[in-house]
Structures are given as C-alpha cells and as structure tokens.
Image (cartoon, rainbow, N blue to C red; front, top):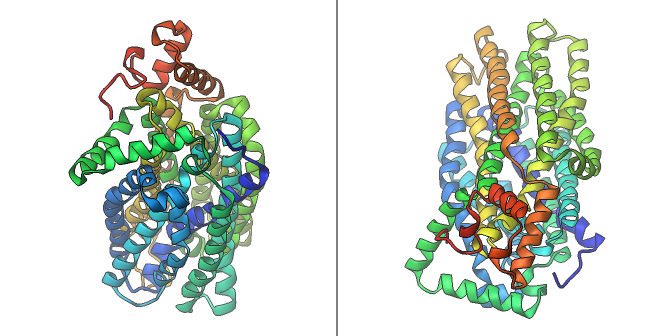
Length: 504
C-alpha cells in the first residue's frame, strides 16, 4: 500500500460504527418494545415489519456492495472514492433515523419508515465495512483498525443501553415522545461520528498507486457498461462468494452467534419488566453496566486472539454467554422476581455478559477483514464491497430475526401488549425461548468453529503466496505445505486458484 495508516486514521476509522452498532442495538433492543408499547401494534405485527425489512434487504445490501465495487469508474467515484462518497452523502440523510420513532402512526407508516432506515443503513455501512481492507493488507494493522471499530462499537452499545434510561427518567417512562427524543439525540451523535470517519480514512483508488487506480477503474468499466451485463455480474458475484470455504464457515459462525446475542437482546427488556417485575429504566441501567464492561475488553482482544486464535477464543466466549443466559432463567425459576437481590444479581451477571458479548462481536468482524484476501487468491480481484454487502445483510437479518421470532413466541404463549403484567404461561414461553433459542444458536456456532482455520499464521501464508504470484511467480513452483493450507482456506484445488476458474 502506498499510504501508511497512522493512529489518527485508526481512531477515526472506527467512529462510523457508533452509527452501525448503535442504530442496530437500539433497534434490536427497543424496536419491538416501542411498536407494542407506543405504536399500538401487536408483537406479531411488530415482528412482521422487521421480517419484511429483511426480505427487502436481501437485495439492497448486496446491490449496494456491488455498486461500491464498481463506482470507481464514475466521476464522483474518482473524485471522492468509490467507498467514502457514500459516507459523505449519508450525513444530510440522517433524519431518516428520527422518523422511525414517531408514536401512534400505524402499521404502514412504521413499515415504510423502517424500510427507509434499512436502505439508509446499507448506504452507510457497506462502503464503511470495506475500508479496513482498502487501507492496508497488513494483519496487525487490520487488527488495530478492527479493535478501534470495536471500541467505538462498545461505546455505541453503552449509548444504546444508557441513553434510553436517562431519557425515560427525565421525560417519564410512559411518555410517547421519549423515543422520538432518543432518535434526535442519537442522530446528531451519528452525524458527527460518520463525519470523523470520512475525514480520517482513505482507499485504494484515491491514495493507491497509479496502477491500482487504473486497474480499479478499468474493472469498473468492464463490468458496468451494459445494464444487463451488470445485473448478471452482480448476481454471479453474489452467488460466488459462498463458494469461498472460509467465508461460508465464517458466515455460519457469524449468523448463529449474533442471532444468539439478538435473541437475548430482543427478550431482555421484556424479561426485566415482566419476568423480574421491574421497569424499562432499570432495564436500561442493567444493560449499561454490560456495555461499560465491554469497552475496555476491546483493548485486549487483539493480543488474546493472536495467542489463542479466533476459533478457540470464540468457543470460550460461547460457553460464558450460555452460562449467563442460564443464570437469567435460574433467577426467574428461583423466585428472584421482584426482589432486590434478584436485581443485584442481574447487575453482577452483566460482567460475564459484557465480556462474552464483546468477544463474540470483536472476532467475526476482525476475521472478516481477511476474507477478501482469501477471495483474491481465488479470483485475482478485490471484491470487498460484495462481501460487505452479504455481511451487512447477514447482520441486519440477525437483528430482525430474533425480534420477529420473539413476537411469534410471545403471542403463542398469550402475551398481552396492553396488560401491565403477564400470565405465567407467557412468562414461561419468554424464558424458554431466551434459554433454548440462545443455546441452539451457540451450539451451531461452537461446532462450526472447529472447521474454521483462518488465523494469523494461515493468513500470512496466504498473503505471502499472493505476493509471490503477483511478482510473477509460477503456480507450478508452489511449496506443498503452502498449497495444502491455501486449498484448505479457499476450498479450491490449487490449480483452480488465481483466476483459473469460472467463479467470476
């Protein structure tokens, strides 16, 4: 890479995830509660909105990823960058985040505004998620960038947990305008964060070598001249990424572990308010403790992951997370509801939750930045955008799937959105869903992690082989050990790598 990544770039790069994680955390934690408490919707209708948005996003996110990959051929792309341009135009569009929090507007209003929010999130996050791979090829520097992102992400989790409680305390927990105020305050914060990232980052076609810029522009033109050809290339690119072994395994781990997190997120406010007989302000305070615990953890994950490897670190986090959720269920069935010691125990459990939540967030998003290198070994291309599109779609799927399923479970067990207390059957359904749903997702991620082999050492082997081939080395001269490791990471026979395939 021509330009070096400095500490100001590292710090500023992570800021945009204040929006990425903050908006999603607030939505996954409070959206269904807002729809049922202040929107007048049933849990099923509220969950349906989130599910419909997922269907729409299955096209929006990959399309956005493909667009950013090939935006470099345009005048705007050449001037502002094919990725960062979209961060710039997102700033005046941030009002979209405010309008989703207007109370008592009905199903169709909430559906339309949430769909707008989904498209807007894709506009921001998909270009953003490519920037670490754009800025550097170095493993350690990517880890630092990811650590910065996770620190900002942890700060976003803190805001998503702490800020609602403060606003509820000031405006009243039954004030329908409290959520609108929350949306306005967060929108201002998000604008400042995205602006900081825009001015702190760079990318290959604007700061790379002349050869890099020429190659990116030429590739964009070749794939973007004919609309029908562009559509076919987009569909082909979207399907091809699942043939990359490391990415397919990574996606299973990512989806299942984040769905487990979101099941807890979607049920936790209901759990505190109804099962533990407390209130939304207390729920916000408890969540705040977990978010604070997670912030300093991100300073240590790079060294820990380097020593243990991503797969082993994840398995430790999964066990810790399941222990925490099992304790939640134990408190309810142990007659701790409505007691001061029960609430204090929940505060204490935020230590294990905060650590495990931070670790399961850090690892997948750090490892993701190395996936385009595996893909480059297969295709000879840099396709960060299409991977970012699939990852963003996957992330938003988890954030909506859990509330959607939670709404179905609550309704099936007799949850009454207008009641101040719930039946024993509704509470049992809530607890069992939180425990068993989380357990199944964590088990799937736990088992899959044993097959995932992309770590610091294997990435270095991969990167060295790519550099050797770029320098004119022959494929026939490959070291047998390198050949075996590269084949394991890519899922392709070595003779079919480096563009000798029909994957793109």
